[in-house]
Image (cartoon, rainbow, N blue to C red; front, side, top):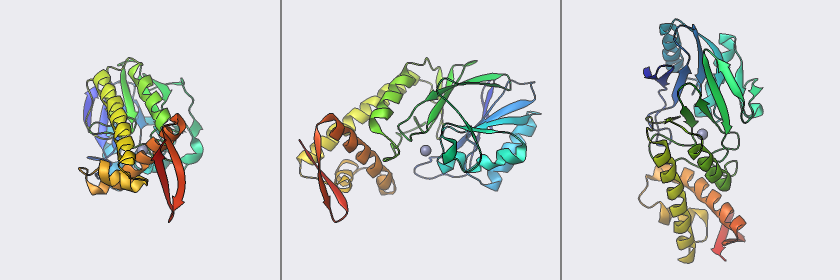
Length: 271
Ligand SMILES: [Zn+2]
């Protein structure tokens, strides 16, 4: 458990991997003295994580009053069922995607609990149901998998959508964040620079994909082999989903054409 500001602590889940970095960050939010905390992204359903989380809550002399998930991916929401044991409600943008009964969140909702106010920003792209949560009292934004503490995020096609992702990055840039608290990795203290870097990275990838198709690549897998040559091969399946998301956007933009399927693999060329 680590304190980030006057109302926020983070508990790191023991699920490290190339995609989850050091593990999932589970956030506890609450004004000290209220005896209440909101849990954001309970994380993976691992006993050691639950014990650490419950110890952190007890250490604040508090009880959990609500659970919110940024999106339904298992590394963020698998443990949503703990809310039932705690006797509280889970809130998610798309309740049907969470494995337990949940209340729906809507864009611009304000969740006022435990002496803090969380403003809901629907930020589709990484996944269709993704939300960021802006803490009114501090200006920090909990970014889930929209922006990570290190490196870049995956746009998990087909649920993920590149055009939506870029729009959601611009929205994050405009929300006046004082810091970004990601779902994985360390805090980002330079929100404007971070988001600008993410937008530039996506623009660069798009041009690299055009170059790869121009050089004769046709399938997403071929593009990944060329464009992600310097990246850990363990990340290539995730990279292929992002590339596929880029290709869908480029088709919509009229720069690339889908030319059918060979051996079960979709093929693309520049227009
Ligand atoms: Zn995710």
